[in-house]
Image (cartoon, rainbow, N blue to C red):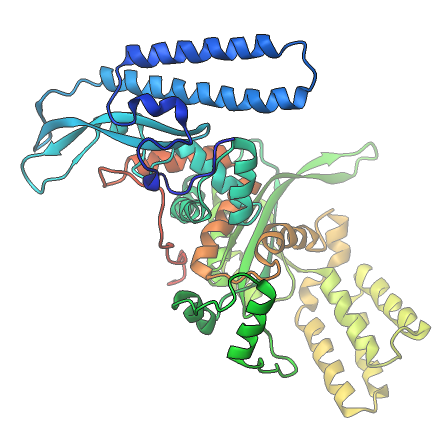
Length: 529
């Protein structure tokens, strides 16, 4: 297969990785010449297949066939671009708006496509008045960006990057296509597409055939972020490598040069975690069983959103999405919001979802019962298990205040001051949320009791991509990837790519670009309110 390439702009003219295009490496071909080359390549492909038929070794045949088919595809792309250039009527001098342009000789260009690099030529229109500059009419007409890659290839690269590291995405592409954009290019494409995610979430249409009950679950997860010391080391000059031929001795020299690492104290974290807030939203549909009881079926139209912005931002986005789906505060429809007991989330939910049923996760409440029981009985004892089971029964049967009264009476048996203080904290946690711990009524309405859905989303959306060993993120750069991953998980990838391509083509710059080296700032929706 052809060798992998980095940025297309670095490819030299006459690059021998793509030999079928060598004839027009230095001069523009005409459509007839390219058409003849395509015909010859197709006949060569047919002769190869006919000559290989009947021989043993299918795998060898398939590998050689892929190379030839991809080569033919590259020629067909060149033919398409050449014919499109010939049909693009550009006079020697013309006006567009207030600007006067003069046609200049065609210039060659490498374009990275799904099938590999292609070399094509197109006319340049130079502005003769105003600020100068110009544009390529063919690129403008076909929607080709100035990055040197097809939009579809960049989209597939970023789609892979939402599921694996940038390096793994490049390696995976290369294993299938025989070449791939560089790791840096894929990362810059991610940052570029990430600049359009906020507009997509705002303008994306609501799902059709939605349910009657809206469930919103919210949780947070910290991911490892780079410290200032790590960033300075990453951005600074590389130290000399005294042992380039031996990884073993290079490591020893590095440890000797920097000295021993400072030992972390108990409780110190090397992760330097920064929280991302994740929202999962779905609807339930009411139905009646054979016994006449109402049940809620679902989930339907599940939707996920994540951000490194402050927690208030994520709750505000959830409110906007709920309104879009027909669950505004004055709609009269049932909305239930579940959190894990985070006080900030509870405050924002109370502010932005005043009409909603706000439910603390029952599993977290039971965890606090277990912690409180550990102050009364020995860990792992039968007495502890029996005591917790009694409290759980009271909790699920709607006897919340009876449960809290029993727990309050049990505190008198604790003699240790430290255990009594811990027990009081656990009890206070439950008392503050007692009015919302109406799990018996919720179960009777067939509503949700726990945040299992959002916790699964946290593991899948965040942990599996952002919390692997050795990862260190910059929040603004991770934000783009996180939101793109949410779009992919929501099943909106193709619609988002069409949306982003349209926005890029309608941008203010004449030469449109996807790749960006700098990330967009963190979103600030409704943070100033």
